[in-house]
Length: 357
Image (cartoon, rainbow, N blue to C red):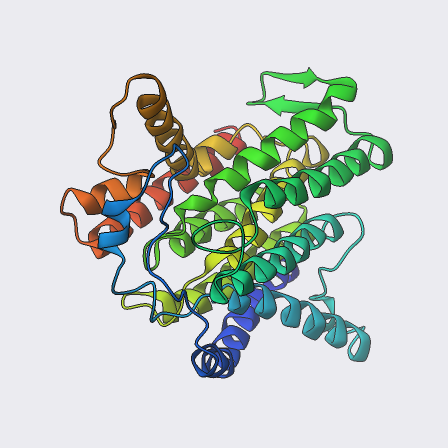
C-alpha cells in the first residue's frame, strides 16, 4: 500500500511545484501580449437579451486580467507525466521509477480528453482576446465547442463499448443498469451536460476550488478501487489546480477561462466512467453529488432561461447562480469561500457513497 500512496501523492506535489515554477513565464507572456478581453462583459445572454448586471459587475476586471490561466493546470500535468515517465526509464528498479501513471488501461482516454479540451479552449481564448468571432465577446461559437465535446465523447464512448466491453453503469451498489448500445449516446449526453457546467468559471478562485475537490474525490474513489494510475492522474490534476489557485485567489493574476475549464470538464466525464463499471464502483452515480455545485450551476441557467422564455421574468437577478449571489451584494470572495466549503462537503459525501458506507 505504501508504494501506491507514494505513486498518488508524489506526482501531486511534483505537479504543484512545476505549476508554481512555470507560472512566472506564463504570466510574463500573458501580460506582454495583453491576453485579456478588449471589451468588458458578455453583451448577450443564453436566454436572449443583454447582460447589463454582469457587465457592470465585471467592468473593471474583464479588460485588465489575462485569460489562458488554465494553461498552468494542464501544462503542469503534462510535464509531470513526462517527468514520471523519464524517472521510470532511468530508475526502473527504484520506487521513484514506479511513479509513471501513463497507462493504456486507465489514463490514455482521460488524458486525450484533457488535451482536446485544452487545445480547443486555447483556440477559443485566442479568438476572445483578439475580439473575433460570431458574437459580442468573440471566440468560437458555443455550438462548435459542443460539437467538439460530442465528437470526442462519441469516440471515447465507442472505445468503452467496443474495446473495453462496457455496456452498463452502476447505481449505488443496488443494481447494474444495462444500456447496451444506448451506453454510447448516454455517455455523450453526460459529457455535454458536464461541459455545460463550465459557466461556473466566472469569479476569482471559484472554478479552481470546485474542481479541486471534485478531482480529489475521484482520486480517493479510484484509490479505493485500486485503480492507482487513474488515482494518480486525478491527484496530479489536483496539484496543477493548486498551483493555479495560488495565483488565482483574489485578486486573480489570471483567469482559467476556456482552455482550462474545457479541459477539466471533458476530462471529468471520462474519469467518472473509468471509476464506474470498469472499477466495479459508482463513478457515474456519484457524479451529481461530487459535482453538485456544477449541477446547481447548470440548473440555475436552465431555470433562468425558462423563466424568461415562458414567464417573461427572471427567477434570479442574474444567472448562473454564483453571479446571482454577487448581484444581491455578496462579495465575490464570500461566494468563492462558501462554494469551496460546499465543494468539500459534496466530495466527502460522494466518496462515502462510492465506497458503499
